[in-house]
Length: 474
Image (cartoon, rainbow, N blue to C red; front, side):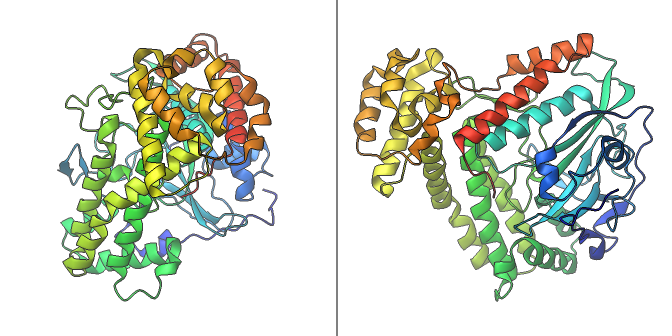
């Protein structure tokens, strides 16, 4: 491997000790066919210099990166799944492969896998990932990043040549291994495991690790657990707000699917909203609508309460209660910020901004079947009223809600209005990622191994990302 000067390995998790992760051996796959490599993400950690053969060696056969984790580590954690506690969790089909520093920021980043084989936590599962599941995650992360949501990034997707049997898609189906680039793999459930075993010393070790590596500004805090919870509450509120502004439904907001840095990850049955619908669910097995679109802030707050319960073993309750009480205001402020960014507007002040955002949601609600979620933001970006009212959805803005929104919008100034000069905004329709399109992108891959539509879609999402110019970093 040609060593790039920007490749900075810094494995930290192995220092935590054996109670936090288990060494594992990667699966040996019959094939390793490179289907996707994220060179923009790779450049941020000094790995863009790899040849395709070297890439496959590291991210298909998992030969260790120089100076990095060897062997890989399956992280230990517990969690609430649909609010039922499960002590039989952990990395069941993935592991932590490497940790390294991001160029420029110096942030500690993780390379973790999905579909890399069985671990001590696989239970009866095969530890594999379907190729369709990998493709769906590549699409999800690209779209979320474009829409300004803090998210893991799909780093690599390699087809592995196995035939998998699954109950929720036609089988046998093709297999793959995915590598994600994330800010952290420390989950809420990582703390829950040690609370379950009544091990406050391990909770303190994990608190110190998270503060030292991800929240160095808290280093001098008198009460590290309380200060950390307050910081995580703020990050989680921002994440929830940005899901809502993006019209995104994660689908499985269990405590093991939330991490300590406020970054979205692990995309199974996700969906993007076709149109405004608080009751819209992503997972076919979410029969009660627990994780429906409109209930996501509630789900995030419930998960934060479980994390606070873990911290109660190592600190007093008052700072934890104070931190939890800050979620509501933090979420409100973050939602206003996210919606203004999506509309391309400069803030004017709390009262005016809240009124405008409420009016925007009113338009989306009144628009019903005729107004899709994403086109609303496309039409009104940077206050381009003439374009919105001359476009295909003009009738959706002619009602009472539309008039109220336009009246409030009148006093706002666009933020970086020069973005409207991008050719993206000359299109009739915006970039979307609805369920039917994902199925249409997968069909030629499944039927004829034709990847051209997927590649074109990813290129189109990238053009949208640069046009929007949003900031997803947590």
